[in-house]
Length: 510
Ligand code: GLU
Image (tube, rainbow, N blue to C red; front, side, top):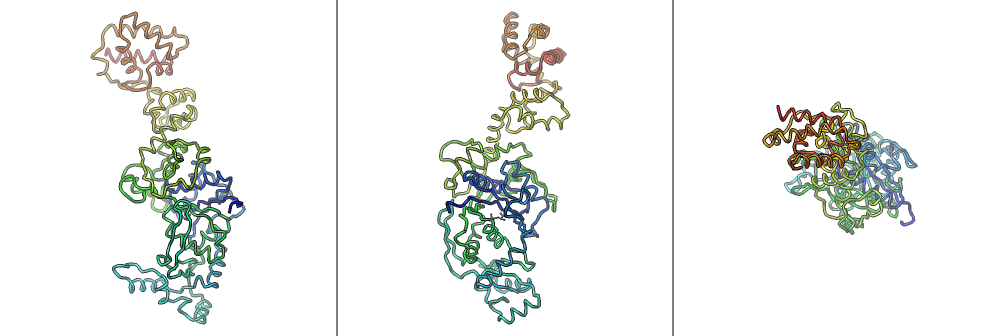
């Protein structure tokens, strides 16, 4: 195995928006591939056309692009094993299903929908409300086990619709070594005779996933824990098709759990608790149902990725902030936890806050620009960058730059009058009138220069700095908020600062 080039795949079915668990599966695949200088393949598993949702594949592509987890091979970028969309590979699968029929590991089943339903009705018990088509039931149905060869031939000649089902052994233990969970043993008694090829010739997921992992030379198959019950079907198919030596190494990744209680985090939990569960906004084209995403809420992709990496993995230290390069270097499957990881939205916000704080002002300002555009505000890019630098440490989301810095873009429309008026007096009034008049004499107009000059004048007039700074802040911003007041004035510039002092004085004296 060691000499083989590492090839991993993310194999989503295009049935909707990407849950954050799905993106984490992408991430772990990607990190593993990059660490081993291997290939990361995106394969679209669209064999179940009843579940196909228009737009879902484009959404997946866009999501991978946003996260910077671009595949080396995919339906859009192509590659040596194209096509990468299973529906386009349809003619390829039948031969493998037929091969299994020939070797006795699969069989034709001619049962109609009505026959299947009546079987379920007939065999259901309170303990087993929905009986499965398995090694026991098989003997009572219309298939190439129960029918004679001649009868089967006749049905085939008449073009009778049939499916091909796997012949699950009644009681066999199967063991795999999972990279996360260690040795896992299944007994085939738990598994029914899954359909491999449908009546329309389309393979089911079970057949297609094995055939494609084989043909695409996948060395490691990483997927969510919810696929563990299907693993015995897949292991047997690898074996029955004679490919056991080529079987990828499996890793079933732990579930992402609800923040409260137990169980897998679902879209509904997000709606109920008020946080996103999808990577990006998603509108289901069939139902028009809208689901909000991390991206549109103002999460930076770097923060989103870092947060996801820590859901079920750590490097054994207390470190929580990792760049993509560090993740590639440090990621290891044997440090992925077996137990599910509880999702914590406050922690997700904390990651975003950390990344916003660390991001350079210019890039952050560019991300904030759409918010300004929407508000009809025009401002020079370097001005927006300066404002961003002053407020970013208070922001959890990019759009909060506005909440913490709106007064840089518009003069106050209302004032916290109660914070200034009761303590106002003629001396303070005189101080601001005098100070405003001398502002144009400050050549650099930096925060330090403004502060020194303000202090000097306050001393000269015998007024405490503390008595003056709050009124000054309220004149500039309208309230008791914002970054250091001299930084605000320095950013607003001489003319705007003067204008606001005058407007503020009019408000206080009015
Ligand atoms: N098509 C499956 C899905 O939708 C892929 C499971 C696997 O990776 O084997 O998640």
